[in-house]
Picture 1 (cartoon, rainbow, N blue to C red):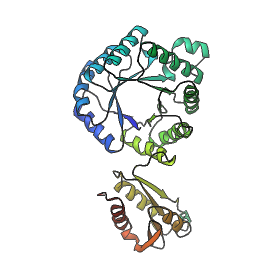
Picture 2 (cartoon, protein in one colour):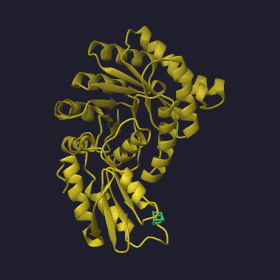
Picture 3 (spheres, rainbow, N blue to C red):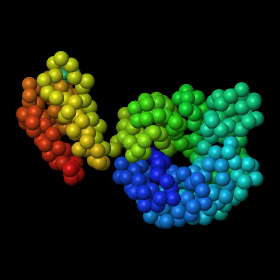
Picture 4 (cartoon, helix red, strand yellow):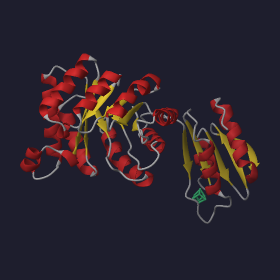
Length: 332
Ligand code: SF4
């Protein structure tokens, strides 16, 4: 499942719900909210009732906020065991168990327990795994088994190694993500490598692509990873060539316009937009729909067959007409 986190102030209920709706519309299936204070915790009641997605509260260092969030109706709590004293941690687990709330144990390289940092000399994968296993045993001993675990580092290989090692020793669901991954391009690179390598190993149950900026952008990357690994498909998969000296159409303008117009499309569809007749016809025929450019013109392909020759000025309108026909979606 694809997860995200709101970037709004949780105390601003309408903005938060609005962002949750936008995230859901883009494919998000679970949403985490920051709960920085009591006011934010109290807003969770209305947010949980009106949210179209399951809500996970992130309570940082404060056990009383976790207890409040559980009372207000969240479906999950994310706790970093390194940030909460043992006795307070036990209180949260007890309250979660009583209300059947799921716990995510979020192990983070930036906040590992001091004894583990001393033992391993730093936040290496072994230290993250020991921290996670220790927390799992502690929670199990308190009788709670609705658990999910994440082991995160801003270093891609530390994350990969830690998740691989943990999954060899535990069957609890794993949430995958590269923390503090940067703006959308940087995050896409780092997340595709980190999340992608783990998923292709068969490891991981929920994923989050962290992006500095509007979290809705995370969905394109998340579904891009899932679709490239042939795990799940959602929305358009646009294949376009890099162009070269043979290209005689404005391919970049075409791709940008098509991407923009299909931003909200949900039906999986492979669309090829190719600059010329060298590789264009092959790729376009292999896609659900595609255009292979010529000199100010192009051939429209649908399900492997040439449908018509079109002029460049009609590329977008004709392509969208075909996509509407194939998907039944009302593309604006
Ligand atoms: S499809 Fe044509 S225009 Fe595009 S990169 Fe290949 S040769 Fe160049």
